[in-house]
Length: 566
Image 1 (cartoon, rainbow, N blue to C red):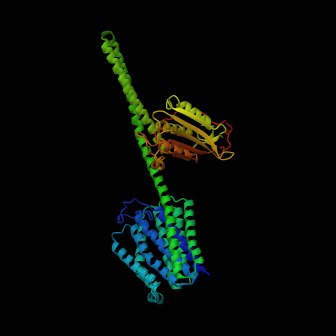
Image 2 (spheres, rainbow, N blue to C red):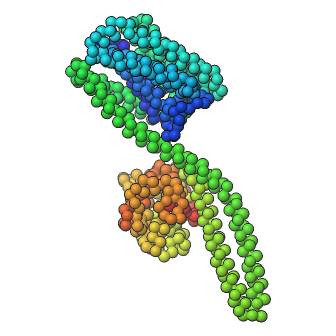
Image 3 (cartoon, rainbow, N blue to C red):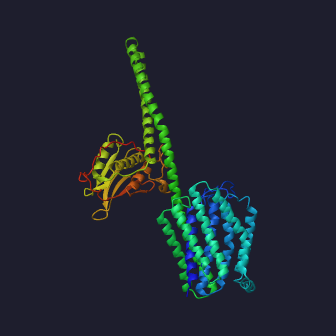
């Protein structure tokens, strides 16, 4: 039967595991981050990246072992678990001191004392654990005030760590940083005070576990309310981490209920479950880290795109205007020269005419390149600014037909188009301009995949229902296809598989899909062509208004947008 001490130990263990996973999922730093950084203090839990995260995570795991072993001791009534709890308690001060000196930027100044404390903590923890196999050591540990003795040895280091935190709190300049430091200092004081009072009140009083629970609640609130990790932690993700940690803690409990009451089997089960949970958490955290890194890179690319577009647009307009002026001047001069040479020398007139044609070709090339750069600047600006879909009823088949007709005299010249449009397609609530932009980019990609001409298939169809839950817009080509290793990166900005491409076309199509809560799927095999599938939810009608009864949009004031190349 489990008493209050065991229950609080289990709750505190789940909370400590939650904090460990949360810190490990939030704290990342470049690989080149120096482990011996010296400098002014940074906001807590945001300092020197992985170097700070490591002792913080280890501290939470040590306290987790401490609390969980006290739960196991209360549940099994086996004093052997007390030795495991002592091992966790002996290791925790070293990681606490390491995290604090890392935070205040005093790693170099305290490297000797930090190393001494690690050696002392590891030695005492090893002695505590050796009591499981060596009865004489166990008798010494259980027959002497071992825990008070250990705490007395660690007391100077703990006090020094608290003074360093107090100094950092006093020197904090920003109110938010002061608030974070106050929460961290209060949580550490709660935990230390709880353990100290427990030593005086006896092991029957669960004051230490209660202090650990309160410290977890305080830090959890600070993380979610004051962004203690200096990043935006989504509430849903924090709840998911908490549920995973609670489930992990109770998986230990379930294993202990099934196994026979033998210490060897209990420790073996603990090891097996711990290894399994380690790889499970590692898989989840790696996926979250990859997602966060991709989001960070896209944000940086968006900022860069905005700066480049702003700096290039004005000079490009000036160059185009000056070039038009020079072209007009050259034409006038060539016309005058041709008129003068016509009556005097037929050869000179022919030479002047040939020169005029050559200059026209050169000017045409320059204007074409300027227009290409202007289109690239437009795409950079579209990529940089937020894309919000202004939804209204859209007849997707009509929009496709009008867009293809618009492109037929230019982009699609020499290319066969096979249309497979579903006549029963439902009206989709979407932004017609964004859909037209996405279709133009997809068609241009298909045309460029077949430089010698060929056939492009454009299809629409409904999925789900009836009524249909989503619609599909498909553009397929018979080009050389895309290599398997390039498919995962195909929708990233600036990634291209074509010479001269900008890598923005599909990135913009993906943003259009995201703006409609849809998705862009790519199917391709080398030598068999490619299929680009834009899936969009049918959506719900817009909120009732004075113009809510207007007919579905089919043209929407169609105008050709200069699409980017993939």
